[in-house]
Image (cartoon, rainbow, N blue to C red; front, side, top):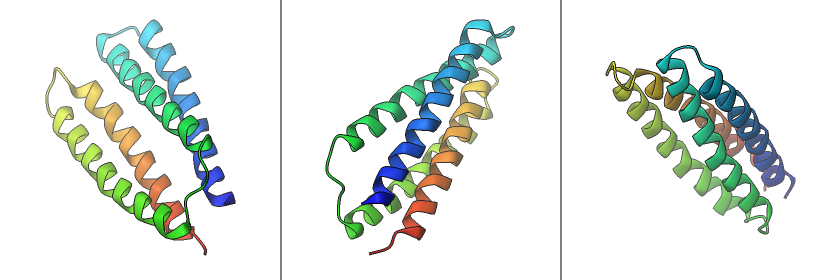
Length: 120
């Protein structure tokens, strides 16, 4: 299924960008907040890369199953955004929370886009 591969390729590209940008911010950030944002971004990128690689190594699921997985992921993505907003309220975890909100928002956009555009 071409949609499945495109979804995972998009996730893989996002993960690469997250790891590169996050790693740069983590290592070269001038403030603890920037380094925290970078660390969190790089970690999400690594997890997303593992998910994309695993998904590409497996046969594509049928359309109904993929749609269900994407819709469940949308719920998880909303949870990530909520958790990030909650952390953002704390001065200690503000940068981490901001990074989680960014990642959750992207994943929500990705998952909802592909769930909506899936065709049988």
